[in-house]
Length: 209
Length: 209
DNA sequence: CATTTGCCGTACCGTACGTTACGGTTCGGC
DNA sequence: GCCGAACCGTAACGTACGGTACGGCAAATG
Image (cartoon, rainbow over all chains, first blue to last red; front, side, top):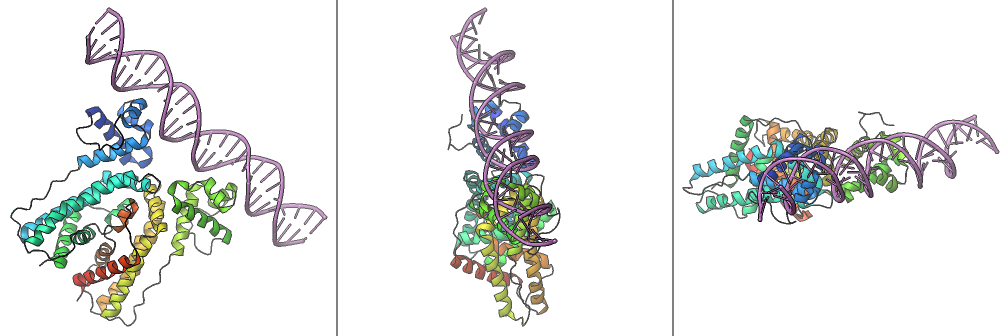
């Protein structure tokens, strides 16, 4: 059994365990209520006893599932070499595209729904995990780019965190909450490209030197 | 029993029924899992038989609760008389303050968590109700103001919906998703005022004539 | 070959909760 | 005062699901 509190990564899991967590992810995407211990055991062709041996209890399985998915979506970091206005704009736009793509994906929606509903109860760990690997990871990833842009004289801001949150708002707008609430909005590749370009332009209009 | 599909308003409910729904709201805010039929009956000092007689089943009670809360938070409409740049800025800033105040309130967070978790199952009605009385109601309320600003030559945009969504993003940013995920961020009166002012300034910088 | 280990499949248990049923009480109308 | 409707409080039922126990089997281990 995985010790509680230990971060689950790619190497601390056997292939069989990864398969089990992928089965849980599939069940979660197909509809939040299908994710029962019996359902996971049947989908993964394993016994419930094994689930409890490996993950402790239902919460442990859910936590491991969320962490496993978080470990899978490591986005490529942005390089801050040769930073001119064009390169910075490309980096920001690519970041926006990646963010919208992940956010609008079935897995992200299902995972955020699960974490949000668990944050309503006493168990807030799932919410914190999603926050840490979602919103906060985004900030840690983009802030060096923003600061590099400021150092290069391309951007003007005092509070980097505030600048990132504005960029976040310009990119995401009402997309995430509408998706979480079940709004059947279409977010195809073309829309994402347009949204990312618009967010970049608006961000430069607000923070460009 | 309330016929299914009928919109529950302020006048279609007796005082006793409103008290029951307020009890359900209180239970919901105190922790999503406390909202059981037995819990509501005990809190409202009524019998479960009465609950089922009035609301049909648990889903009906939840739907009525959400609609009842939505009926309570009718925000004051913005008047479009005497629209100069200063009046428009004040209207936008007040809208932003109201939006942030409602969004960060305990009831809104609890209600959105409930609706989000229900959107993950097959029953999407709660999510649609919250969307209709939340995000969409905001759009219907602000769009006339934006168009009046455009008619007065104060704002420049082609797509009113897009302009509203940008304003929404500038105001809300990451606040709602962080609150829904259980982030213990403080959003006191001072912060809301500053956020609203910043959102107004940024929106004017992007869409001002 | 004998033994241990790990795991599958399944049956089982306890609990929580939605739902129903029923006896007792209050209250307005005649 | 009498009646019926509405309602309260509680007990009871059915089910779903988290968690546990156990038999069997196959592969590793000696």
